Image (cartoon, rainbow, N blue to C red):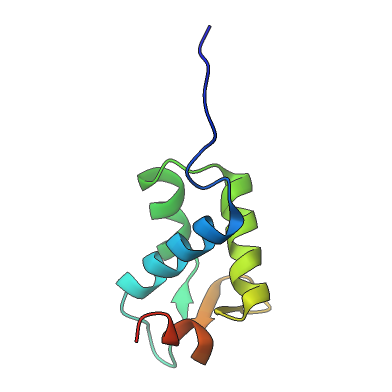
Length: 87
């Protein structure tokens, strides 16, 4: 039997900050959108986070005003508050 502890990204704020770091690592395309797969792939497969942690982190980043999710759900944009995290 394997016992697992709390995941590093079980806290939505920690997950959110990591998602914003992944978004910062990519060069945005025209008009500054960042395709959602550019942040969910590294987070889910590179960081070994769960889909629930990803969802909670993305929701937290949107609620905090760091990222803005396009109505199609295919990309996000940095808000001024999100850009200030790396200034």
